Length: 270
Image 1 (tube, rainbow, N blue to C red):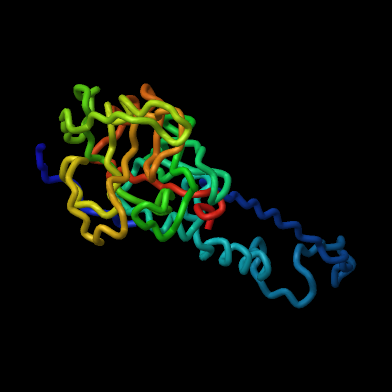
Image 2: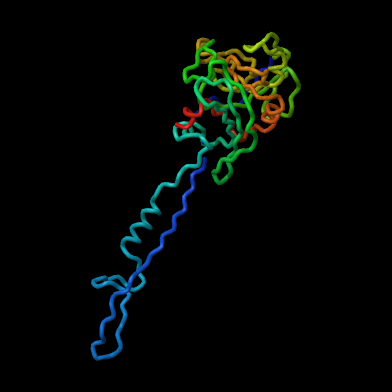
């Protein structure tokens, strides 16, 4: 198998916009007779107001100052809360969001978002139907628990049994990606690893997805990939339909420092 150098490991999402319009109205004071019997003079100021004519009221000035100093909301990926968003690296401009309804769901939806130079995140591809692990999700993944890890992880290293469909990341074509047998629903697994994307959970980034080194130890599991959907839940991976996966592989750009943000919706919304 090939071994390659690549991106750094895991570093750890709806745009909020506000526009406020302040409108000031000043009521003039009552007319006062002229000192020498001349015409009445209408003053635009209330009694005791020493401000020059045309100056804003104190309340209006304080409101404007408050607006000027208010924090500008940080744009986030739709459905992603502040705690999860904080784990997305500053340099990342591509994020694949994979989310299920509850922690025990093994069906999910995947959408690729991209961030514009202005900071807004918009859907660039998908949504695509997906499968995750048989028993759903976990924030403390263990080998054999049949749950998919929750979190924000870098992605990029690719490979598969079939030729490169046009990846911009390194692609390792290897017959070791061949698989046989049946899944949890009795469906054939053949072809599931025709194309894969490695998720940087307990792995050394920059290497073929086949690499078996586990920095956190074997007990924390590993080999968590995005692979071809075989029509049922997985051991721990995320599975997309074949053409969706091929589209994703072609879309991922090393310069965008892509990540996958994955887990049940309530967890990602935190």
